[in-house]
Amino acid sequence: MEPWLLRAADLGGTAARNARAMLPGLAGAALVCWGVALIYVPAALILAGIFLLMLDGRA
Image 1 (cartoon, rainbow, N blue to C red):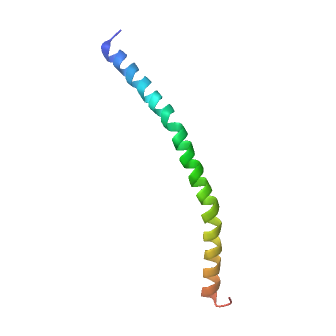
Image 2 (image 1 turned 30 degrees about the horizontal axis):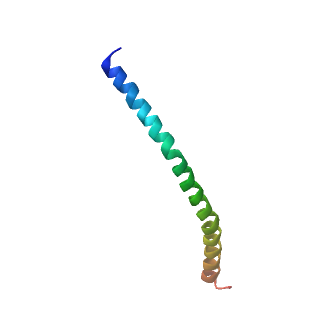
Image 3 (image 1 turned 90 degrees about the vertical axis):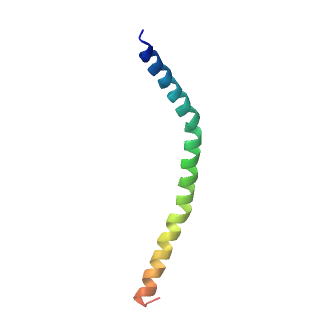
């Protein structure tokens, strides 16, 4: 087999191993971001509503 082809196959295997090693960390980071969004998005909507009521002058 051609040497460049063997090298490309070796690099592909290295990339796959690195991706498999990083996936649990990426999944954990995604869960943390999702949890933060569950807290801050409703709070931001409530604050935006209060701010709009204050601008309206009826609060």
